Image (cartoon, rainbow, N blue to C red; front, side):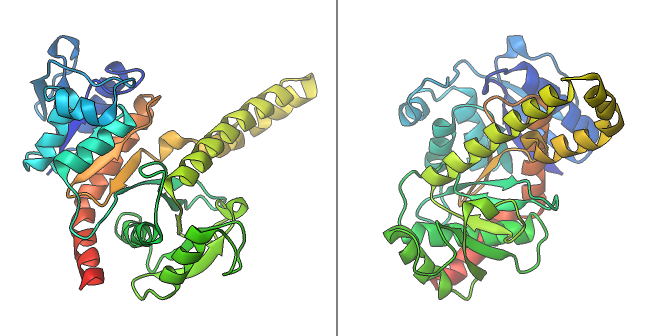
Length: 328
C-alpha cells in the first residue's frame, strides 16, 4: 500500500481539480491511500482510503517562499510536507507555489546526505514517444559544475528505476556537441562527467536535439532548464492553434481534418504535458512532486500516479545508495 499526502489548496484551479484527481486516483488504484490537507468546508469527496486533515492557512502564489514556509505552519503545504518527514506518508503532491514547495522539501523533508542542491526533473516528450528525463527545470537558477554532476547521478537513477531504462544515456545540454564548446560552467561539468564511472555519459547535446531520442537523460542548470521547458510548452500550444486554424480555413481542409482526427489527437496527446505528470524534486529524503500550477484534473492525476510509481520503485532509497557510493 502506498500512502501519499496531497495539498488540496495549491494551484490555479484548486481545490476542485485536486479533488477530482484524488477521487479518480483512489478509484483507479486499490493500493493507494491519500491524506488530504486543506479547508474542510471545501472538501466534497469521501472515500475509505482518503483521510482528511483540516488546515487553517494557505500559501499563495504571491507569498515569499521561505517566509511562507516558516510562518504559515498550519498551511496545507507545510502540513503535507511534515507528513512525509514524520513518516506518515511516503510522498507528497502539490500544484502550489513552486518556490515554497522547494523550501518545504529542503527545510522540512530534508536533503539526502551528499546532495548539495535538489533538482526538479520532468519527462519531456520525444519523437519516438519514449520521452527523455530532463533536469534541472527550475530548482536552482545558479549552479556549479559539481551540482550538475549530481544532477546527472540523480537523473541516471531516476531513468533506471522509475522509467525502467537499462544503462541510460546521459548528456549535457550545450551550444555544441564538441567537448570544448560552451561556457566555463559547461566545460567544467563536461570534464567531471567524462571521468565518471557512475553513469553512461555520451557527451554534449544541443537544444535542437532534445526531443530526438539521442539521450535518455539531459542535464542542465535550473535557469536554462526552466526556459527550455516553458518554451516547449509554448511551442506545443502555438502549434496546436496553428494546425487548428489552418485545417479549419476551407472545406477541403475540414474534410481532411475529419479523416485525420484520430491521428491529430494522438500527436496532441504525445505533446501534452498533462500526460507526463509533474516535476519530481530529486535529492530529498522523501518523494516530493510539483504539479503544474495551471494543472487540470488530468494533469494532477498524472502527478499523483507519478508520485505513486516513485514510491513503489523506491527511488529515494536507490538514490541514497548511489549517492553514498559516489561519496565513498
